[in-house]
Length: 488
Ligand code: GLU
Image 1 (cartoon, protein in one colour):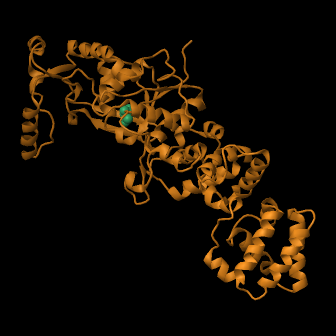
Image 2: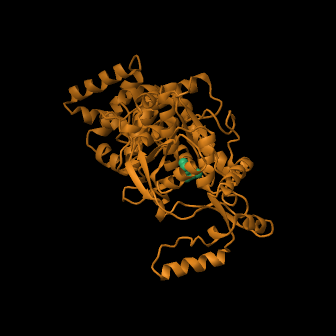
């Protein structure tokens, strides 16, 4: 029985953090694999020895783990098609380079960098494309092999002079290239390292990759890779899906100047991983409905390459921020408390070792503010007044609310009533305030706002009655007393 479950791969070059673009490639591969019950391979393309670092491998793995994108084969878990670092597969590439040399589909090139750049310049002056002039392609293979013993050389692919390569891309449709326009590109460098196009093909074949899902900045590599598949006798070809690029709001390719680009920066800023993954999923993929919030499981269930669009997509930080707020609201309160706790401790608003009562208070405070948080660290400013008497009164709020004529006398009465009301809960507090409004013939707002400003220093916040209940009688009475004194 042949195994028809798809196998896909995410193949980052470890030269930096996991960026939004890379995370999207990883996510789409992951969703495709999980949706189809297939496998995701993580392969580290580290043949650029100068730019690849082990920290970058760490960053990429951390980013994927944070987004909950697990892989079935690759670093940290192994698998049947390893090793999964290209620098550990050099013998394999050498073997296939030898095969191409023997079959005459590749050749050694001894041109020095200086010669090559002179040739490029000459071609440019003559108004021709800066392609390699293929001079070494004419060298007899035996002689070239001998020369290679003492001289450094690269190995080039002997590009067919004619023919058309047609890619039937799942996203882009038919894309055609003329072989005659392509260069005899290098497949192995002087230091024995394979180039990306070559190593990727050998690995994609040996790792039995069935679908190659990647950014369309790679589409011009695809004809070269297809020709390599053919030259190496690798069949069948995988299917290709090239996703359009993500742009910033100004239409330029997403980059640093559009704000955070690394996934872990979003973690630092207090985004939730599910919100980020949900948002990234919508960069180019659309579910075919107006639904925007998708749980991890829903994304897996709904995802299909057929619904990945052809036009570029725009990264909109405002939308991501909105989505994060939605996710914060959906988080079970106890879980949210654990997530915001470090920020409250950091701001010295709560202690690491709280008593049961302090803990219950802190949890109630966080639950009250849950509705309005967009980012986890928002919790600090939103809740400061719950934990300390050292909070500022908003200038505008004080001017607008506290300088009204009725306020000093009203607060004095309210203070006594708050000291006595039983039970001290949202219901009785609401009754008390509404009763005052009615008795005094003032608007509800005129009865509510002075209390709100007194106990929180601001005009906006959670439901006043619940907020007052959570703050508790002692704090509330003390704060109203303080406001009365300030008004004198
Ligand atoms: N290492 C390549 C990159 O990070 C992989 C491209 C591919 O998916 O083939 O761009």
